Length: 330
Image 1 (spheres, rainbow, N blue to C red):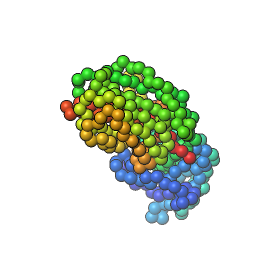
Image 2 (cartoon, rainbow, N blue to C red; image 1 turned 180 degrees about the vertical axis):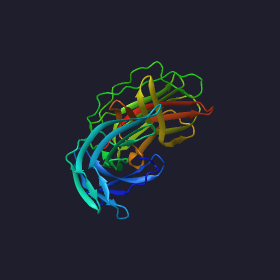
Image 3 (tube, rainbow, N blue to C red; image 1 turned 90 degrees about the vertical axis):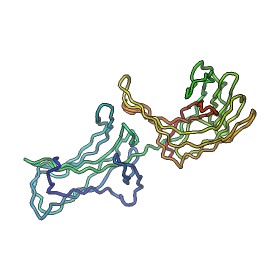
């Protein structure tokens, strides 16, 4: 519809129990915050559409319909939209509108196979669209977005985790991922999950072991762990722990990746000594995290990494990253 076309109709979409339904605040592409109603997989989408004419005019139309869409928008070399859900129902046959009309609608037990998402180069959205068809003018439309949560039960624990111990060099800002060796098998924690061990090492200079309780966490979980200094012959200045969200859109070779640090905090200031242990307790509920998305409809993925960074007195950085799986617990 042209921006110079002034619609002769007002269209209002209201959902049943919208005022009492839970909402979530989501940032728009323009940086503003908006509240969207929350739905879950298998839940019906029901409501009413009210159409009003402006200034007492009589408006002829050729039918009114409401549609429910699920779509993925990706932006690599331009915006591409693909739909994975499309439902429609007719609300009114062709007629002349001269006073407000309200039409009920219901999409029963709708399968919503993915969770809503807004990232930098990918967006997954569900929305209602009302279309009023006209003979010679542009269609008059109105959209209303929904936000879908995918609640799952905690996944089973993994059987083993491997990490690498790397031989370093004197280059600045290097990510030590050479000469991998397998760490000993993980051991079960008290809740049946596997304890994960991640090593950061430079041969004959530094050996640090980062142990945390498991690799799968709900969005309101707590990461509990401990950092052990097994060998310290470098002058470590301080150490940081970060949560990094990594969004990957497209497939090779036409693929882009964007990383965002969700939270970073310093866990040590000063030189550690051999045998020292630093406890870690990170509450995830206080941060803007999203569940792990893996190859959603073959369009995009979003993963979260736990990153341990050590910085020595010469500003050289030694770091190690390990993926953690996040899910929304019911």
